[in-house]
Length: 218
Image 1 (tube, rainbow, N blue to C red):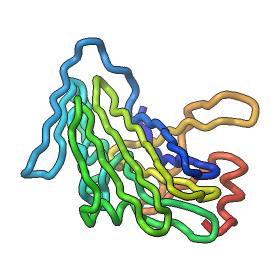
Image 2 (cartoon, helix red, strand yellow; image 1 turned 90 degrees about the vertical axis):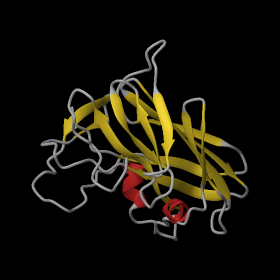
Image 3 (cartoon, rainbow, N blue to C red; image 1 turned 60 degrees about the horizontal axis):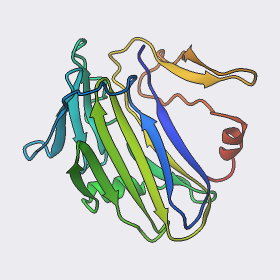
């Protein structure tokens, strides 16, 4: 089932304590004893991976850092929009400031660092003056999935802070499905009516708080 998704990580009040969040780019858990090929390529400046079920690349230095290519071996279609990414830390948000694309600015300027440890690609984002916190993103491909862990280490309070992650999905898919939660039940996979127009964003408010956020200056 093709999915087109952008993800918010909401930190209601960022304080001087560590915060850890998780995301998942595909559907399954790692199989016991599986073998994953993961190596740095100087030619593409990416970590190239092959789990046997998925292959692709994780890009550490770019405006579109993150999962820069993702192909299911049985389908042979790159699900990532060309020259974009999945699980891309796009911008920081707080009331009154509007979106600030600090993660992308740091990454494209090569102010981030990266390394490979035990099958995990680790990207480290340094603190900058406006928000003054460090962020670490860990990506590890396995089986039919790519897991991501985000760790934030702040040095000051930032009330009503959020991080926005973007995933750009190829238009080769004919449908978009997202998990939506109703007021009286669990999340249900719902088909979006967003395929009539190209080149425009299609937004869904995640909850009533998100509707209020649209008017608070972020």
